[in-house]
Image (cartoon, rainbow, N blue to C red; front, side, top):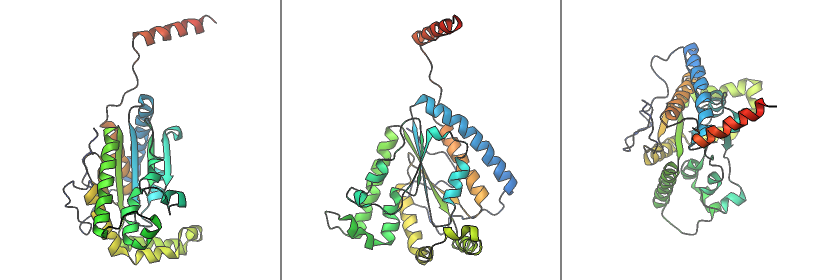
Length: 289
C-alpha cells in the first residue's frame, strides 16, 4: 500500500502539527527562474509517469487541494498538470452542495468523482469542506438534515473518523491519496486581494464574501490544524506547502507528485508468449498486404 514520500512539508502523523509554526515562506527561496525550471522538469517527468499509470491500469491517484482564498489553488493546478494527457486526468471543483447532494451523506458527492484506475483525479476543494467551512459555519448544518442530534465535538470527531476510514479503504484498493494544504499568510492574502481590486482583469475574482471569510481567519486556522492532524496518515498524507511564493509552491507540489508516482510499481504491461505470438501474426498479416 502506498505511503507518503518524505518532505519537510509533510504533516506529521502524530498530531503534532501546529499551524502557527508552519512556514508560509522559506528564508532563502530559490530564484523564480530556478523554481520554474524545476517545475518544467517535474511536469515532463509526470507526463511520462502518467502514461505508464494509464497503460498499467492498476493504480489511481487522487490529488486534493485545500486552502484559504487567494492561496493559488487554481493557478497551481494549471501549472502542475499542464503536461498531463487530458484523457488520463479529471478535475472537479466542489462548491456549495446541491439539494441532491444534501440528500446524501457528506462523502457521497465526492465519491461519485473518484478517479478510476489509470487516471489522476484532482479535487479543487473536497469532502474536507465538511470539517472546515461547515465547522466554521455550523449554521450550515441544519440544511444537511442529520438524523441524529449529537454534540458538535462528537460530530466533528465522527467526520474525521469517516474520512480516515474512507481514505484507508481507498488506499487498500490502489488509490494514491495526496493532500495539499497551500499555506498562505494573512498578509500575503491581503496583498493578493488588493491586486484583484486594483487590476481590472482580476476584478471578477474578488467577492465581498472573501472579506467576510477573512474576518474568520483564526477559526479557519484552528479548523485546518485539527483537520490535518486528524487525517494525515501514511496512506493519505497531508503536505502543508508554503504558498506565499507561488513559483516555489508549484515546483514543490509537482516534485511531491512525481516522487509519489515514482514510488509505485509502475511499468508498461508485459505480454505473455501467447500475446507475442498474436503480435507476430498481426505483423505478418500487415506486411502481406
